[in-house]
Length: 298
Image (cartoon, rainbow, N blue to C red):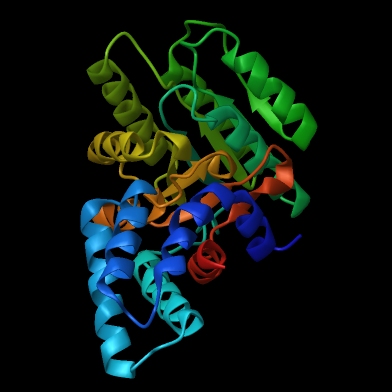
């Protein structure tokens, strides 16, 4: 199943939310635009994003004299795809080793995302090493070990409660010594307080930059799509500390709040690089703005 079909299937709840507005379309009547704006807001696209999209759609309908629901739907898809087109959607991992630093609060699917990324990379013939940098959460390293075995990746881990910086230092040394292509670093999603967590992440980021100054580094924030606007608040907090390069949006298949991708693009200027639309390894998919927008309205 391709990206479009996966997204179409996975975003069924969000699609129903937004698609209901087109039942009101009768040549651009005001009720349609109000219903559409409300649907986008309920899908957690954000008030500003929803307002801008509807305003631009009204202008397009007038300028191009669109009268059919299909024409208007396509015009909206064009607008939404353009709004999502911020930054680079592909991972830049050309150096050897390259580093993927994965951050996010507990419960968003961080460990699963790392496992699926590892499986994707090893499937492409890359040599992958995982760093079990979440030493705060019980059983985090064990879960990551299971994913490493499934993906055919190596892993560096210390005991529970160990210094995450020491784990990362050892993992990067191992990655260099073993000619690893990609090192993926897991991090804690919760410490004793938020400031401690942010300080710890900043420290890990400094260690990576110091030990591999020439390496390509992607810092990905994992957000649970079902949390909607709360995910955006999390993103703003992490962006201040970790120098995010992109977002992985998980659990899109279980939410009517898929519009959060637009809020992330508009308010943070961050590209969504991967989306999760199911449990399987293949259900973590590289993000495609055009296909996403069209699937959302199909």
